[in-house]
Length: 146
Image (cartoon, rainbow, N blue to C red; front, side, top):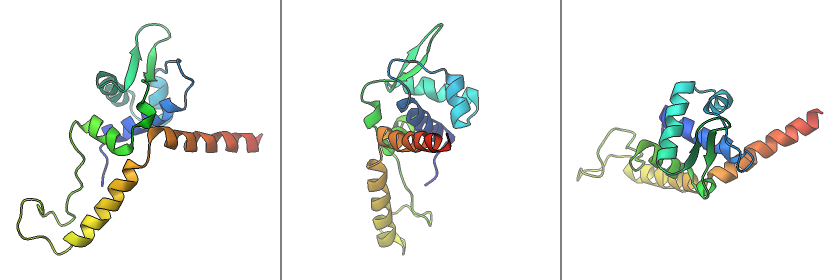
């Protein structure tokens, strides 16, 4: 499964925002700097997430983006589907349309099992849990280096 740049930026931005102090907006420039994305593309993704009710967008001096309540509980599939505007589809690796065709590809049974495990894994990974794991490791590493 390949993520689009928009989905990648959305996921990485949400993980970063989940680690920020509550009630403190973060500039899109700071988010793009942290995640290593181009500022215009990241800003476009952040606007999309705000429009879809995942982020607050605070205008003016001291403005930026903040997570809305409940956003930390979004899983990876949720983020991809919100960003892409459609359900996530993991296609046949041979390019067959196994859903519409009456003849399944030779890899179909094994591929379905792999897809099911992958989807289960992605559904079990929330923005908040990933953020806590990433930024806890960063905090421990920084403390050890002192």
